[in-house]
Length: 476
Ligand code: NAD
Image (cartoon, rainbow, N blue to C red; front, top):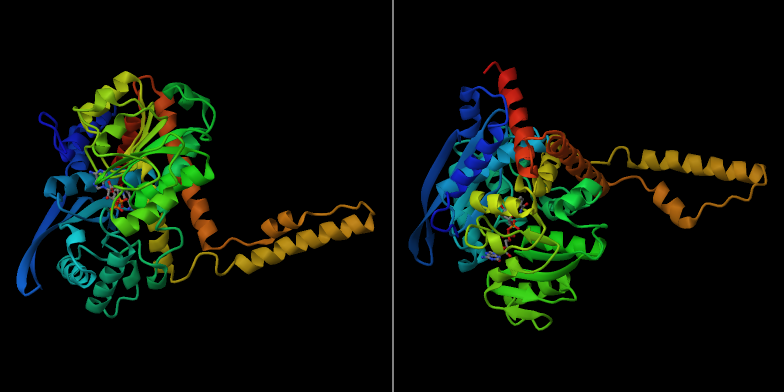
């Protein structure tokens, strides 16, 4: 996707890092230590498929071990390469620091087009890749914990955890070796949609502040805002679904691998997704206008642009034609360094990837803690909470009857108030709190320092500062 004259993805991340450290007071040695990727393991392995041996290339990169385990997804895509995996691992370090998830940064990838394989073949390939990583402790509950990313999901995580358990039969914490698992396999409620949910919470938080709206020239709240989303996969689908069904946004454009769709009146996201599951893409969807060159829709008029597919899609070739005043980077690295500069000059506000898509790692953190605790959140206190609420309601009703006040509590209120929080509510509450707290830390710097003019640099300053503090406390 990168255009001639553009830095690579990793160089782009490094250049963004450099913009931030230029405004910080770090020794050159510490700065370099934080910037570099600690290690990248490349593996080539063979799998016998359809009567012949096929060789696959995979990577697992560890960017920073200032905290362990290190954390980061495993991606299945054809364009996976060392540069990309290292860039993504670096972003994981900064992301975890920003949302205060106690992990270092890591990432993995396998060069494969998953659509070309049957499910049982994918299982064989995934298990073999996992085996190669597990035997080198590159998957391990206390050292390196993957999660889903592009091209992978609950199914692949279930295969990985099973592979780990077979190879570590006495590890009582085996389930914590990977997050994003299905609920039946040790997962947590709310993880599948967590990254998209985080995008929604990030936008809600942004729209709480008048200064933010002035900065991008928008007003009001999310209700009625037009949205264009690129990539209707795990992240893009959930973000678009929640924004349209819960916040009143209108998704006027959707861009997918086989083209784009446009409808001024808003596209029904759930319906479109159902169509995509059957037909494999957006082409021929009857309820919106099809645009063969979907990427041009990135340049359409809308209030909020959500690139949620892949890196480098907004680059030197199209940045000056992007019209959206607010861009939220749901994907990792969708805006190149050069494009970022052009967009900032034009006055667009960019909510950066390391914050915008941190919902996934936040809920992964909860899942990991759940696995280590061997108990579902809410299991112990839920009914006790309900009993205490019932006591209060009984007492209010008794007082009202005794004093002849005639108070009645509405059945709706009673039902909502009485219910103790289950796992899903606790996960959502923890995610919302995390997204708000991380935003606060960025905006304090964005609005509080005259030399900081955008959220990305603010985000880097917060996270690099935290990683640096962690290294210093170790005596480095
Ligand atoms: P996914 O595989 O579920 O979805 C990606 C979608 O993008 C697919 O629908 C695919 O068809 C589409 N796509 C592929 N090429 C495209 C193109 N050229 N133009 C338009 N659409 C295209 O992946 P995902 O998990 O949703 O990840 C998307 C992005 O979000 C990645 O950058 C990933 O690193 C990032 N991310 C994911 C998570 C997570 O929890 N899954 C967390 C943080 C960040």
